[in-house]
Image (cartoon, rainbow, N blue to C red; front, side, top):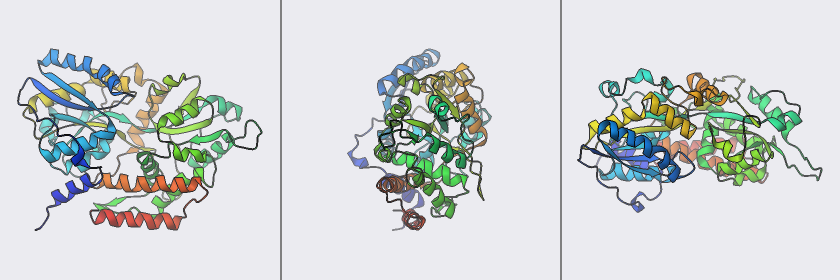
Length: 439
């Protein structure tokens, strides 16, 4: 029997998550026009904090429309499994949040409503959104099936005290300068013969973060990871980008080898707050560092450095963030559209993005929270230096395979066994073949 391309795409998406069958069945979409079920993704440090942020806003929506919202906040670690269960079973909520990089893979299931011009007009039209955020709504060349809610980009955070002690007067603007700056910050501060202050901290155990660095650094060198839907992971530029990341711990020795075991950003933030690292390369933090008793007097924010070698592109980040989508199984299409219109309205975009420390993807959301140096740099990056992750149905496979490889290579590097370019290229070629075969 011939298998349809839609079935293959859905199987590819399911293959990258663990044991979907082990998840609990979702409740059926309701048929009451005065009730909506909404799965929101966890954006803050706790599910309870998300509820504290969202429930007052959803009460405003109910007061204005008469539509009650059954809210469930789902941790990102569980969200894709839950969504896939809903899309394959035909049962689920009316609308969902999703990581914007998942959009093409989830779009390929055929379970999400398409945001054509007529539907987009009901929430104010696509001109309200930044162009790069709209690109995250689905695969290239298709009608999007999700709408941007919250955006993040990678930025350089630096410890002002350590910069001053090292005689560094400004953050590095190029990757070459970055390595030089980080080496100046890497020191044995107590003269016991061991380095105890490092130029950079990384979250080495996270495959998602590993693939982010690989993608950003490779893209800045001109790497293209897909030709159409055909994987092409093993270009020289892609290999060099991964080598650059590994070399920070390996050849350059500006990252503590123990960072290969860091499983959470909290490990990096604590080191930054305790003056054990001089720089971090992380997505927009907003209020996060306030939890570590840091203020603008303690740290600065700068754009990600640029690559200056042959074939370079001015890529500083991919556009990270969260989108909203409506499931075709809903019996309350009008209500679901109204809720997305509400969530993407200027006032709600200001309220929610300010609370989460993210950047509004809509142009008409303005407020003091987005007038900080950090927010201005983020918006500048979004406007001209951010790109989406690959907009293909196999994107989740790309993230999983490459991310896991880079995590393993960093662990090897921590033990003094940084892989060669040939070894990296061979493994990337194997990953391309696996994705091409649908594995």
